[in-house]
Length: 575
Image (cartoon, rainbow, N blue to C red):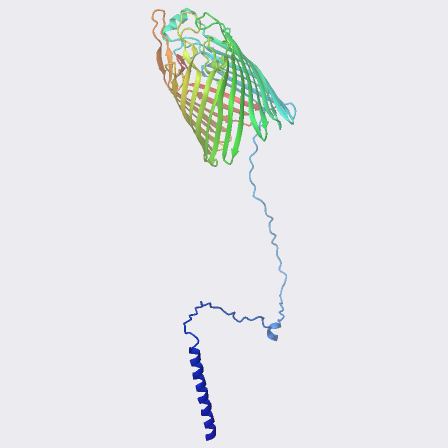
């Protein structure tokens, strides 16, 4: 044992000496230093242990299903109940209104007024129709404080034929009209003179016309029309008017230009001028071309065009070419609720004796007739619907006319003609700029009640004349149409016209002063009617006109009839 301990100590000593020698040798050859090693921490998450299989159950209790048996104890029950079959609710249907192709109306009233009209229409075949009408409206003398005949009459007859084929439809018509008026507006200062001269103030007009139009389908030529009128009077005056129009689509590359063509001829003569010295000849020949291109994008529609007109003046022999803008646009700001529109257009307006006499039947047959050069008619407005049954339209416009025709009371002369006692009107021309604003509301409360209101205001600027003669500053109108029930119906029309200016000449053979400007009072005219349908074919009606009972003067020295009553009946029928 002591010998083993001796050996162990000897080995330990030897290893200690060897380790010490080796350490001294390394310190002599290797320099000491510090090395820092930095490594970011990157954590990891080990996958959790998941059961890879659904253990199978080998359980006889859970696997075996028990059979369940149902026993129903039933016995018969006697029953006498029978369910009723269902029925749809019955809606009462209103019988459709029978429409008749023909009707006749006859009415009589105060001032020995007679009103009559017959309209006829007959289908010759599935595509052909022939029709016509005859009408008459007359009234006898009876205006208060008027010393001369003031009766009037208006009679018309017309016949037409129409045909509708596969690719086109056309219509032809012809008619005749006779009108009678009187120059009864003699001022008080010349009543005695007119009576002593046995003045006959009757003035008759005759109008014969014929024409036709045609419409094409799926062609570049859309439509065309021709019209001829012969207009004359019992004073030796006569006028011929012929117009031809066509509307075509002109293709240019990938677009189509809608183009209107127009030929207008006017020729007429008066036996004498107002002084009774010379006859008056007048006439115009016009050729017009109006191409228009329409551009649509979303809610915006723009029409861009120009109007070109060639005019030959028969009286002067001058030839002129006129250019006018023809641009319009509409934009739906809010669907049908607010629609903005604007445009600027111009036109060469051909004036005629027929047009003047229909607007003012008291003109003298001594008119100087020439066309009006409307440089431009610029307008802007808003229109739309305030609700499903109410619409509106508000607009403003500025019009510049050159050589616009104005009615002015004629001078009193000593020629002893029936129209030279200050009881007729002539035509004067001037350059006039017109500014106007207008508003309109239409209400359809339901299918049985309709109402419309419109008002306009005008302001005029003239170059040569002192006033814009006989042009009103305000115009307004109101109409009401009411179907009270199945039988009763009623309606009303109300008109208001503002003040107008006219000129009065003082010339009694002794005093010959400068012309005086007079102001014609504004007037209000209210007309109502009521009727009753006895059956589908026969109905009666009654009318009252000028209910304010005001014998106002629409034209200077020409008062109208006061309150008027008329009653009549209408009969509808078929052949």
